[in-house]
Length: 210
Image 1: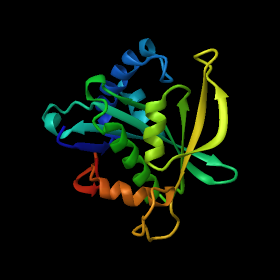
Image 2: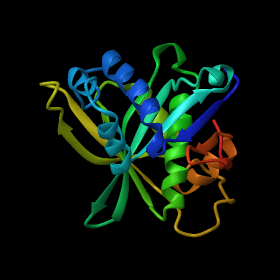
Image 3: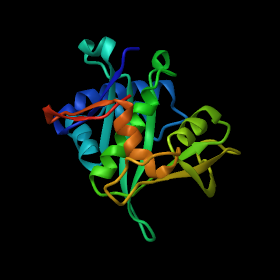
Image 4: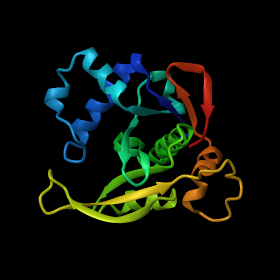
């Protein structure tokens, strides 16, 4: 894997989202909210509506980017927390099986974090299924920490999921990252090297890393 290009999907990129979303539901139906049989019948207008309601990021490995086939996806849903204000909730994370453990999930996460920071959001949250130690460890390395909240998973009786959060810096200085803390999240994202391009502004890329 030579690197990853992470792209913010725009309103006209519904076909990209449809492609990766249907593959994700086919591969991991119990881990993602959604219905494959139902979403397979959606019209373009329904996919555009999904893109309008939240921000989706798609990952393209540079080695196969000419195929224009995304191999990873994640969604940022904006939520209003009564204590923390606007929060970016990370969900629907999926990476195509043969591309896993190549840094794509980390690139997608960093892209989402950087995008949230650019929108003036100071907190990112997510839920991790119990027993998913690989994902939990990866999020810890990226600066996420447990909130202490645990809840049952409706689609998996007897299973629980744990909430994690990442607090983003409120000041402009993210250069003094001597420790792997949440305050260094944006700085680490930039240092990581993900090339993030907006689907609507391909010629004006936001430069980050993978």
